[in-house]
Length: 101
Image 1: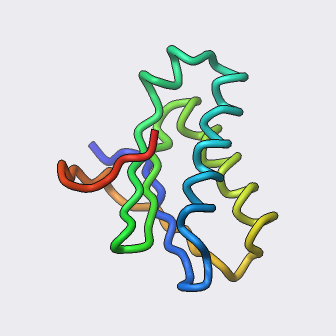
Image 2: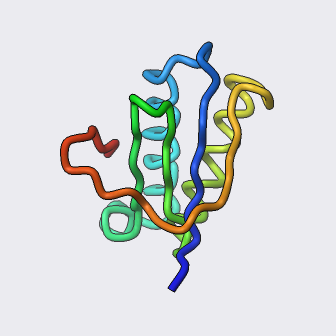
């Protein structure tokens, strides 16, 4: 089964600390819409610092809202050309990498 997953890649000029802050802001905003418990259950995401990428699952209403908010925050803060987004098949499973939450 193919899931709805989006992978964001960032230009070298984009500080990943600020990307992480935008992701956390999107998660907090989504908590306002769906509640903290539902976001904890449905918000699958992964930040890969080495690859300068972030992956967010969008197969639930929570995931879709996180993606909508995240892309909106990125566009406003960094501009259209600072990142790209593509649909991929799955969220990577790396135990040694940092996971945003």
